[in-house]
Length: 389
Ligand SMILES: Cc1ncc(COP(=O)(O)O)c(C=O)c1O
Figure 1 (cartoon, protein in one colour):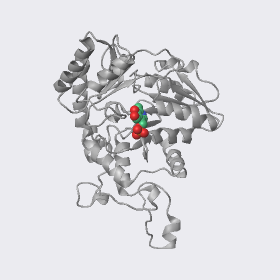
Figure 2 (tube, rainbow, N blue to C red):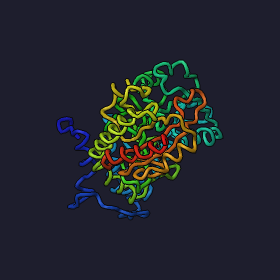
Figure 3 (spheres, helix red, strand yellow):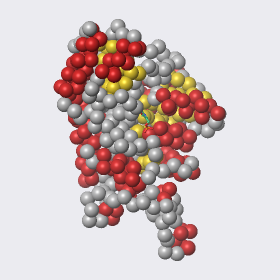
């Protein structure tokens, strides 16, 4: 795209990837299902190279997957391409495998998403990669933790349970200076609220299962990378047989078209509920990146264009059973894994850490959906009343 016609992010989510040559007269690029793609001749077949945008084999996808990948790449100024995966977790593990080799060391935040930590402690360990965990608020002092073996730094900002916002530019500056690759789980913010490549990240990851899909009906992962990393990331992913089905990619594109407006509604609802919770005597800290009491709030204020729908809060003076009962009593909040859909969810969370002290006890994590926030507040108020009773 020429510089002159540079589009704004809310336009890109609508327009991105909807090339005329892919969609024809349709508004949306259709679902093209394929394993085998037929060539005109043996010479054509032998001359083809595996890459997005070329019909070759189902693994490299069809226009359905290319459209989603192209839109996500366009949303990240400075990115060269996007690899798609069948889950958000695969979009974390595959880039790590693309970057790390036996003998290397990975630095990961101590509050990292649980299954990511499990992958580091099981698979990566067996593969000969050691993971060391750092305080997510370490900032530029990450330089003191780096060793000769450190090949990559993983970031997750904010953390998906305790919500610490990281000083991403400071960590990236240290990493760049030492030839270390940075990978960010940017699922909470998406490129709409935090364009990560522009902030210095090499590979930015979304669990597309959350806000990209947006309707709790698809599993999807995406990794968008700079020119230095995209090619290798894509080739390693294909070497490991990773792709996403056209049906799931299509649901991703369908979700993406409304992501900007949905995020605004999630933001408004979550802020209203978070502010209300702050006023309640049964509630301790409210860990929402846009509130000053959230660790790393100053980085959110400096770097982010807004907030989304996920945050946590402390319930005061309850034990585990009372916390579970509080969640069970809620009528408008579902109980279940994941988040980012149109519906509200509540979950007791118990962060697992090894190097930094847990910053909060008796946490409940909320995902604020697209319901009227006053109804959600009424639901929370009714359940809080039963604690006090
Ligand atoms: C922060 C974060 N990253 C990654 C994932 C993994 O995504 P998926 O469930 O699509 O594998 C999740 C899922 O809950 C998550 O919360």
